[in-house]
Image (cartoon, rainbow, N blue to C red):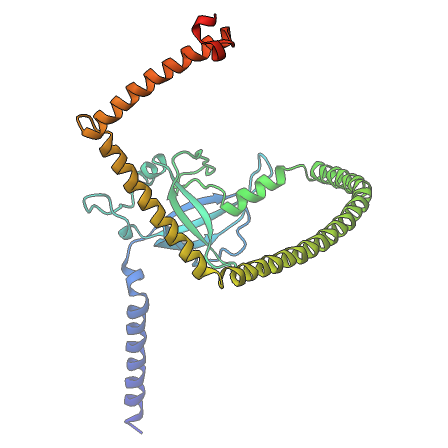
Length: 324
C-alpha cells in the first residue's frame, strides 16, 4: 500500500510532462512569438470569415483573424464590422533584413504607401473567406477608428462586393422595360418578315418548278444531240471504210502512174537543160540560129511588102508591076 502513492505521483508527473511537451510542440512557436494586433473595418458582409481564418499578403500567410465584432455609430446609427487581425511581425521584414517592429508607425508608413485589406474567397465549395493585404495606392484611404489603441488598415471592397455594388446601381425596372420594348419590336419584325416571306416562298417554289422543267428540257436536248452525234460518227466511219476499200485495190495502179509522172518530170528537166546549153552564146547552133532568124526576118519583110502591093493593086498578080 505504501508504494501506491508513489506510483500515482509518477503517473501524474508523467502526464504533466507529456502535456507540457505537447503544448511546446504544437503551440510553442506561437506562445513565444511576438504578435501585433491591427484592425480593419468592412462595410460588406463577412459571412464565411471565421476566427482563425488566415491573413495573407499576396498569398503569403502573415497572421490570422483574432476577432470579428460589430459596432454601431452613435452619430450615423450605422453598423460597422471591426475585424481584429493578429499579425506576426517576424513574418515581415524591411529590405535589408530589418524585421517589422511593433511600432504602429511602421504600419502607418505601409498605409501611406497603399496597404489595404480585402476579403478574398478561400474555397468556393465551403464559402470560407480570408483577409488579404495588398498595396493599392490608387484607392482612397478610409479610416473609421476613433481611438489609436491599435493600428488600422483601410479596406477596399472585394471583387464580389464591387460587382454587387455596381449591380445595385442599375435601374432594373428600366432595363426590364427596355427588354420588353426590344422583345415587342422583335415580335413585330418577325410578323412582318413572315408576311413578306410568304409570297417570296411561293415565288421561290414556282421558280424551282420552272427550273426543274428547264433542266428536264435540257436533258432531252442533250440526249437528242448525243444521238445525232453518234449517227454522224457512224456515217463518217462508213465513209472512211469505203475510201479504204476503193483506194486499196488501185494502190498499185496509182503507184505506176506516180512513177510515170516522176520519169516524165525528169525527162522534161533534162530537155530544158539541153535547150539551155544550146542557147548559150558562142556556140555553132547559136550562130546558125541567128543567121536563120535574119533570113527569116528578111523573108518576112519581103512578104509584108508583097502583101501591101497586092492590097493596093490586085491586078498586079496577073499583069505584074508594069500593069499598074
